[in-house]
Image (tube, rainbow, N blue to C red):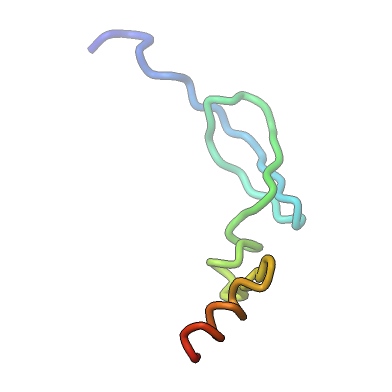
Length: 66
């Protein structure tokens, strides 16, 4: 195998906007922050919200009689 073809993975600390912190490996050799993680993302928490912009959900319900 060729040498120096794969990037170096360093351990980094990730901080979410919800306050959750965890350690992972990344080619970015510095700590960074993210906006959404598995502790606060609606898909993983089961607290999904339907955002009704401009009444589209209500319009759909009226049109199709739901």
